[in-house]
Amino acid sequence: MLSDRLVTAINDQINYEMYSANIYFAMQAYCDSLDLDGFANFFKVQIEEENFHTSKFYNFLNQMDARINIGAIEAPSNDYGSILEAFKEALNHEKKVTKRIYNLMNIATEERDHATMSLLKWFIDEQVEEEDTFNKLIKKLERIGDNAAALYMLDTELQARTFVPPTTSNAAN
Ligand SMILES: [Fe+2]
Ligand SMILES: [Fe+2]
Image (cartoon, rainbow, N blue to C red; front, side, top):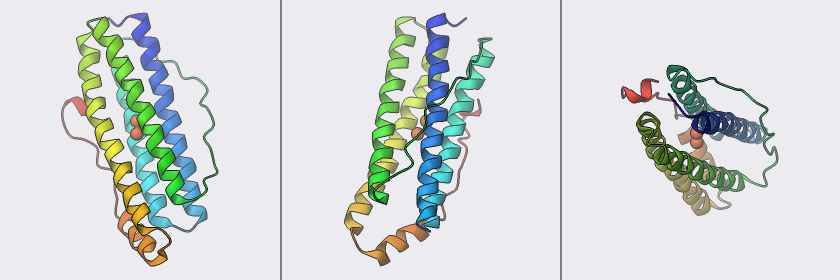
């Protein structure tokens, strides 16, 4: 059985994952406003990733017979100065998520809750990938600079991104 402290902390994280999805929804809309369909598709897939994270925490609480509480979600920013700025904001956001996951792991470790620790191990690895994805795209965008042709090439490349749900047994949650 999970402690009240862990249930509250995981419910908070469910809210934060939904907030993450909404941030990427706003970024998708920003890319669509610039007719950058590939970048918009990138964020659409990112929303699916975040929804997957939400479901993973949701299913865990459900399996552990804990109550799920859905609260109000903070509004995301809808204005970005440039594509590069949107990606920098996304990376900053992912770094905040990583800190939150580490904090959750600290609580689970203090409480010697091995089931939660096992779940969070997956999220720790996932955050390495999330930060890497944004880091790489920021570097590409910085190299592209004002080169419109190069930007459209990257836009075409990002059009191909699809959401692939992880297939490990732990991830099936
Ligand atoms: Fe997430
Ligand atoms: Fe994320």
